[in-house]
Amino acid sequence: MSTQRFAIAAAVSLFSAAAFVPSISCAQPSGAGPDSEYARGLLIVELEHALAELTPHQRAVFLAHEFEGRSFRELAAETGVSVNALLSRKHEAVKRLRRRLQTIYDELRDE
Image: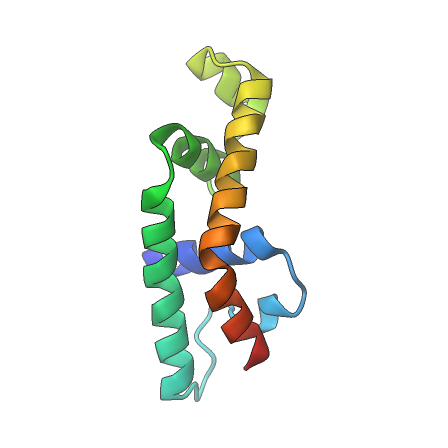
C-alpha cells in the first residue's frame, strides 16, 4: 500500500465519520485543485508523524490489525501477548491518534 493510501485509510479508520470519507478518498479526484492536493499532503505528513509518536507496541498492533487485517487472536498466538493486552494497546493507539489528528480532521471536514 502506498504511503498516501495508507495515510488516508488510517485517517478514515480513526474517525469513521461518513462525512469524512468523501472528502478524503484514496483516489485523487479528477480535476482536484491545489487546495485539495495541499490538504491531502498535510494529512499524510501529520498522520506519519502521529504514527511515529506511538509506542512501538501500539504502532505494531494498530498497523497489523487495521492495515494487514490480522486478528487479535492471530497476533496473540504469534507474540505471546494476551488478546486483552493487544486490545488495550490498540485502544490507546486510537485515542492518541485521534487526539493528535483532531484539529486537521476538523479543518478538512469543515471545508
